[in-house]
Image 1 (tube, rainbow, N blue to C red):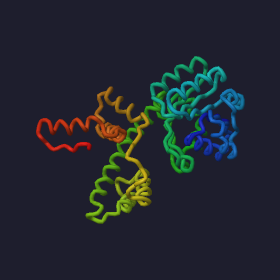
Image 2 (image 1 turned 60 degrees about the vertical axis):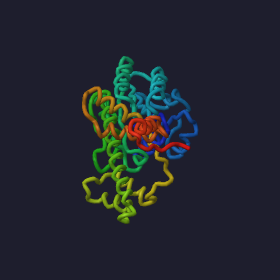
Image 3 (image 1 turned 45 degrees about the vertical axis):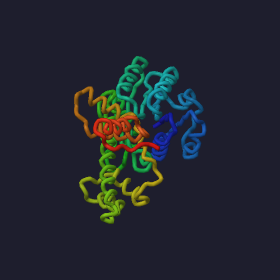
Image 4 (image 1 turned 135 degrees about the vertical axis):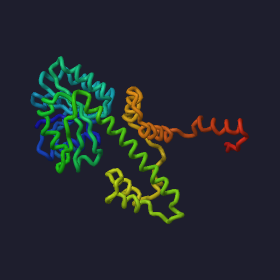
Length: 303
C-alpha cells in the first residue's frame, strides 16, 4: 500500500522502516528536513512539506500522523484538510486524549474523510519485534487499512485489534499506559526492598531479576528490561531519580475519579512520579517543622 507518514521521530521512524521492509511504498515528512534523511536511504520517499506529501500519494490517500499529542497533531490535521479529498484516510498514532480523537473523527466526517485512532505500544523495540496496535474507528475503514496493521504487528501472534468505535483506540491505550505505571512502580519498589538487604544477604539483585524472568508468575518484558539494566549496573548510578509522566497516567486517574472507580495502584504510581519530580518540596519541610512545633520532635535543619 501507499502510506504517508508525518513525523520521523523514534516511533515514526520505526513504523516507516517496518512498512518499507514489508513492501509498502512510504512517503515521509518531518518538519525537520534532516530527520528523514536516513529513512530515505532505507527506501522512503521524502516529502518537502504537507502539500508535497499529499501530491506524492495516490488517492484515496492513507496518511499516518505520528506526532506529539495536542497542538502538533491538531495543527497538522488542519493543514491537511484542504489538501486532501473525499475518501482519504487519516490515522492518529499519537498518545492523544480519546475525547480529542472522537472530536476529530466528527470534524473530518463532513469532508468525507475517514479517521482511525490507533494506540501504539512497543517503543523503540517495535521496529524489530513489531508494534501492538489498538485501533478505534469505523470497522469498514479498519478492514481497508488492515494490511498495514498486520505488517506492523508482531508476526508470531495477533498484535493488532479493532477495539471499537472512534476514540476507543486511544482510550484503550490510556488504560494500557496506566497499567504500565502501576507495574513499573511495583517492580521498582520490590527491587528497592531487595537493595536494602543487599549487603546483609550478599544479594545480587541483577541475578534475582533475571531469575524472575524464567517461570515466575511476575515475569514480563518489563522485568526482562529491568534484569538487563541491573546486570549492567546494579546501582544505576548514572541515572537521576526523576521520573517523567507523559500525561496518559494523569488522564486515567482523572477518568477513574469521574467514573467513581477506585484505582489506588495507578494513582499511587502517578503520585510517586510527581514526588520524584520535586526537589526539596515545601510540604516535606512543613511536616518536619510542624512535628517539632506541636511535639518538640527533633527536626533536621539546613545550615
